[in-house]
Image (cartoon, rainbow, N blue to C red; front, side, top):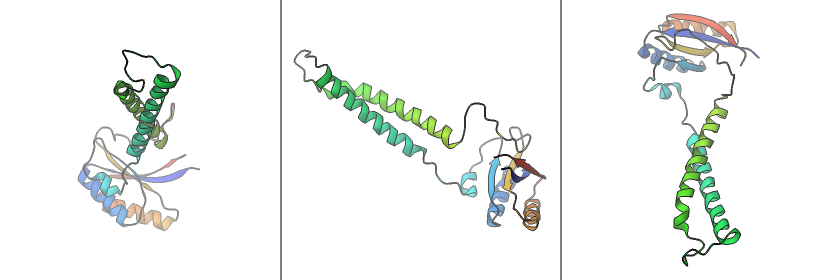
Length: 174
């Protein structure tokens, strides 16, 4: 189902921050903001929540650690006990390097996989281009276009009052 958006472009980051704050205070829905470089404080102004990716990293890392410990203990004590110099079979100090490596490997791979799933990134996906030049010198604010014509006109006038250089309507198939 195609969605309609209003794309407003700005020439500097201060005007963009002010526009995002004004648009949110007017109860309009901000879809996304594009800038050629990171802007300090933009996340707070947009009202974005903190990511939950660190929880995925911790949980999968602990699972990797538990798997490494259990597997090494099983292999050293039950499956293939080898008496080397009278040392005990469950010598946990020898397990530390493998535990560390499996913890880091599993948590890193799970974080990347969760990021791709959450961001809906997959091979061959074409990202919609809302405004030309956002990688050069253009700052763009993408607002969901309201359903009614009066609300759409109000949204356009709010963006004009915020100092938008250009406002255009775009539709995507998201």
